[in-house]
Length: 106
Image (cartoon, rainbow, N blue to C red):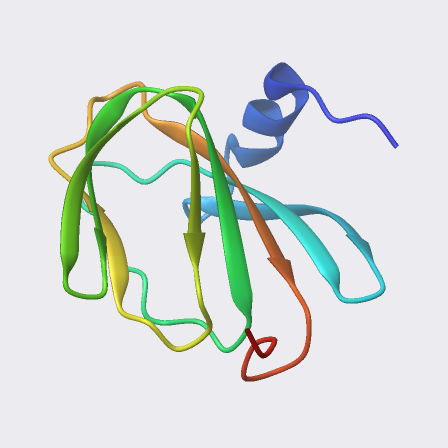
């Protein structure tokens, strides 16, 4: 399996959501996510990993709010409130959901 940014962004064109699942295998689901202006996502039922492709801004993860930029990896445990804030127009990220409902135990 090979995913490119260009192909992923092309899959989003004309799609009615800011995300699109591009691959799944077992418990792994890989998406492209490119919100416009505001991130409206809710907590998810599985653990989640972001790899920021482009852009910068702030990432709220539970009680934490920190700057992020392209090339960074961000982890969110299942059920934790999180969102991207004040992000640049070119912001895009890979999203990987994995593991069981409720998340993996530490």
